[in-house]
Length: 243
Ligand code: PEP
Image (cartoon, rainbow, N blue to C red):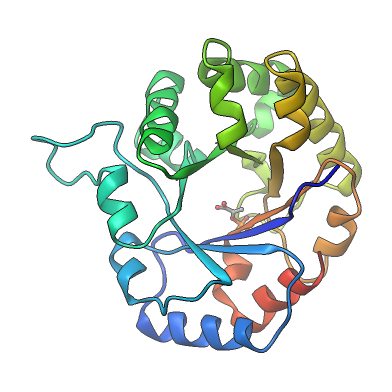
């Protein structure tokens, strides 16, 4: 197994030029055995210094290529602004922008068509977990994208983000996360056995400098998608060092 670990930061609607400087400065001081990705607000993308050691991503993309879609940003525009990745289907977009699995599948396709790597975010709500529907929910979210287009898998990253763990300070335990990551990999294997072994599956949900090392020991956890802690330069650098 030769999956390169990936530590991704989701700044959400936070950050400014000063944060670019402090995060870049903290990362420049360390040697990291993983790919590091920052997804800032799109307006900040062109302000990052260009370095071979830091990848940039968008937090969302349009499913459309161009045209009369006021306020939307196409994958090509985001690529031109510096992105090589794009988060797709983050739970906050599923919740606040009512994004459907079908729209999310179209966004994954649009990202790949433009040469961006989609980071497909999936995960269950607290109620769904309590009703023991986690696997059912995740299987449906994956099927919507990959069942009829298994070739997209090799060009994707998956982020498992249980909604109950996002921004709550309550991370999944390493065992809980591993159990779901293994389920995700098995499900992906039903679409493409070889690709499933190569796809990176990130864990997201209240990852911090204290809990990350234990999560990273799990065999199917290939890195993290970090929200709140990614806004603290020293803590984010510590998470990158822990992989
Ligand atoms: C996220 O929003 O993708 C996330 C994982 O946030 P947090 O780390 O703050 O839970």
